[in-house]
Amino acid sequence: MKLQGKTIVITGASSGIGEQLALQAAAEGAVPILMARSEGKLQALQENIQRAYGVPSRYYVLDVSDEEMVRQVFGRLLQDVEAVDVLINNAGFGIFKTFEEASLQDVKNMFAVNVFGLVACTQAVLPHMKRRGKGHIINIASLAGKIATPKSSAYSATKHAVLGFTNSLRMELDGTGIRVTAVNPGPIETGFFDIADESGTYVQNVKGFMLRADAVAARILRAIGTNKRELHLPRWMGLGPVIFSLFPRLFEGVAGKALNKK
Image (tube, rainbow, N blue to C red; front, side, top):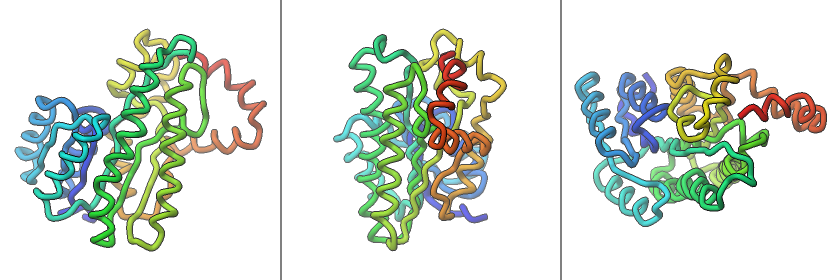
């Protein structure tokens, strides 16, 4: 069990993929460190983990968009634990509106959480990993970061930024013993769409393709300790970015109408 005894920090841990990552990591003997804004949900999850698996899980209330709060929380964490083996930057949200309909505040909020929050958490733990000469940073991006789609211009832009950051960071850390992986999932059955797709139209249109959060979490955990650069979920959706890069006009013409059903 390669995760036995590993300390895995998970942002956005209170629900969805983050919750499943924490539960499955604990089941494999890892020590999940839970971070999210909802203290009630974090406490309930921690108690569930300790009761079911007997591992010393911890939780920290954190709004990743608050830079000072990130510094303080990670400062406490690094005093509380001997080592951070894995950071999974999972916190994020989206709003599916046309650019004209989206408010500038919506755009700023998505960048604050999806990009700057991810960067701040990474920066907070990176010196610790470099001193140890090992670690793994896993950034939850999206296939939207590979293929921009209608009604998600700002969200796609945040995920493009995450992928650019992740790829550059991987090259900067070459030879340090720190691995860096991007995860690009398609639509997943989580509470994400309660905010992103208030009308429910998009969910209805893609219901047959939606992934289960537990399956996504399992694939992510299997990537820990490997040199996997990117993980496309489901695997066949990884063909989309390849086709898009080779035949962008054809792809937009064929897929544009379907992708506009948000």
